[in-house]
Length: 144
Ligand SMILES: CC(C)(COP(=O)(O)OP(=O)(O)OC[C@H]1O[C@@H](n2cnc3c(N)ncnc32)[C@H](O)[C@@H]1OP(=O)(O)O)[C@@H](O)C(=O)NCCC(=O)NCCS
Image (cartoon, rainbow, N blue to C red; front, side, top):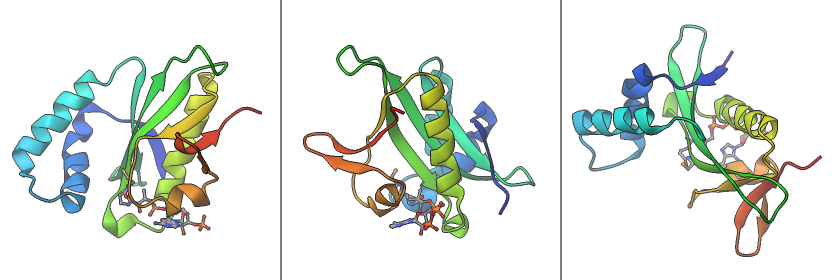
């Protein structure tokens, strides 16, 4: 599947709500859409919402990462808070494309590593080269 990853637009709040709704229980669509819209409006500057779209422009998945300044590790850290792909599009490289775009953006902004703000299933991240570090959880070093 040809997937393009781009900055999430405010108009993406509906497809993002669709993806979240199929993975989260006890959510109500309209209030979820309103919360996501607010989140996207807040996500400026050091906050990076991204969406993966197919050739028809359908949003297949999204990721949200934050640039966290650090003084002690030689550069800022990229904090990956969310990455989700809609069920029917899973297993076709969309998550990998999203993560590659996060990595490229983070590297371009001088980040020295990606940390995960994600619990639960970690197989996908380990497959993408994340390593477990004491007290830090899974991280991906970005230093050359
Ligand atoms: C985790 C997730 C983002 C992966 O996206 P995806 O589009 O299905 O993954 P891809 O098709 O890009 O897979 C890339 C590689 O990772 C592997 N992979 C994917 N999910 C995996 C898992 N759960 N465990 C181990 N490996 C996994 C694939 O086999 C593939 O391997 P390959 O490069 O050798 O072919 C997606 O499955 C998802 O949204 N899951 C539910 C939400 C979630 O748990 N998000 C993370 C917390 S916010």
